[in-house]
Length: 116
Image 1 (cartoon, rainbow, N blue to C red):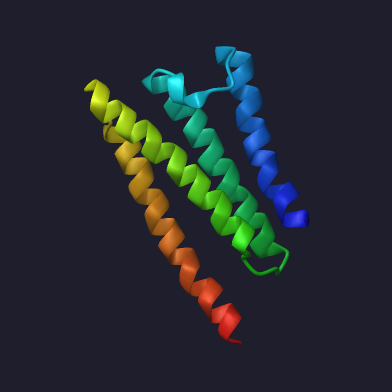
Image 2 (tube, rainbow, N blue to C red):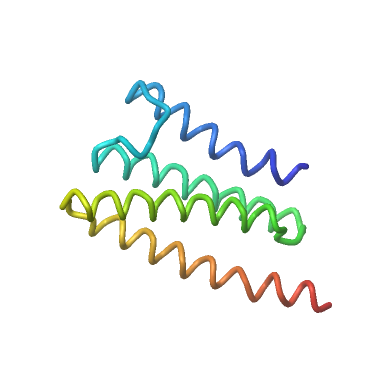
């Protein structure tokens, strides 16, 4: 339960920012720079929460991977939407690639802790 609360904090912070600056709660309808700012806040907040969980000496749980998957799915939805509308998507692609690299780096740690 503690992990869900810690991960939810980053989601709540990014949604509050979204509401205050853009007056919406739907990030998919945002224009490029606004979405990228929202997405960066979301991703950095999430990985900060992962760092907090690791510093508390707790293992990375399924909830962490679920949150990472949903964040990645949001980025992929926006990527597909950008491609279909013919918009530039370079920064989003770089963020998604970095997110994949970090997720792959987290997986062996999860597998090793489960093996012990």
